[in-house]
Length: 289
Ligand SMILES: Nc1ncnc2c1ncn2[C@@H]1O[C@H](COP(=O)(O)OP(=O)(O)O)[C@@H](O)[C@H]1O
Ligand SMILES: [Mg+2]
Image (tube, rainbow, N blue to C red):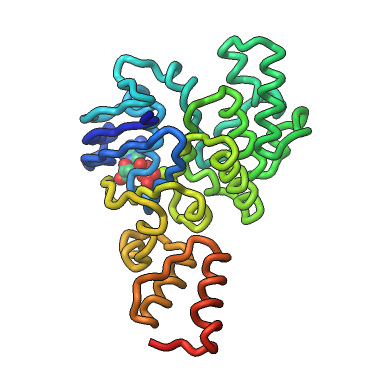
């Protein structure tokens, strides 16, 4: 089943002269983990807003093309209805939490859906456990670190039992530990729960190893789509589009250049380490052409 299908989508925000997205076509299958990668202004947030109907329903502008969410056109559906299927987490942790306690925050969505009380409790416990925030029920969201807030925001989405989760640069404002914990949660969402995820990022350092596919955006267009191993192969090409390539892509690329080959690509440190040990150190530590 297709979770999201964009066909020839163009969108220009009201008052803007440029197309934020230009002829974008993209299919995300149910269960896929997609990272949308691009520099500032490349159109990532606009893709996120399309994936939950806020564009074109709530945010005005010129819109062309078609958007289907779980194989139903967004036209003729309401943002509220789509919100029961698609959860969204934004860049700034502060902008999305507004309740007095973590528990209320995570219960808010299902309460609005009139889910029975005992089931709400179960959902809250399940979601907090999943994001590693079990036991924080009574804490004020404002007393949490940025990373904890983002994980509560994810839990608040998950408690609605969405079919797809969209995260727009969720680690943007986080420190390294906050980032690490957040990506562990995302990895688990994919690995254990098979959730359909669209993650917008400016660099693929963290998500490369567990994304099914990477969508590379440049100036409102999709310029490349494919598995991380293919799309992150060429660090110079990424840099020309203002994208910081994963360090392991740079290592592989330098190794390829040094050995006049193109066969190396690394997604994990383990993979890089074992290949380098086997191919180079294992052969007497001499790098030969
Ligand atoms: N509310 C807005 N009004 C006018 N232009 C906007 C608005 N939001 C985004 N844009 C423009 O749309 C383009 C794509 O933006 P966006 O999707 O936010 O990119 P990204 O998330 O990759 O930074 C940019 O040129 C940006 O300036
Ligand atoms: Mg953005």
